[in-house]
Amino acid sequence: VIAVIPDNSNKGLIYKFVKRFMLVSYPIPCQCVLNSNLMNKNKKSNIKIIASKIVNQLLCKMNGEPWRIKDLPFSDVPT
Image (cartoon, rainbow, N blue to C red):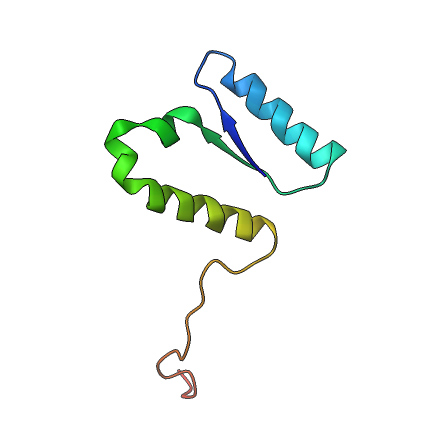
């Protein structure tokens, strides 16, 4: 679940409520994102970067591997 939190003075309370609700009531991985991070005109071209970071964070919360290095050099040689 991705929760978009509005930018206002209550964002801390909203964040705590969403996290507590999602962890206690429904144990589902949740990622909270501020509205300003998604709607910032300067970051509009970076929406793919923002989306990939959100997906990586959710993947980690589900015990996934966000990246993997294949065929490390010298992995078969003692160091």
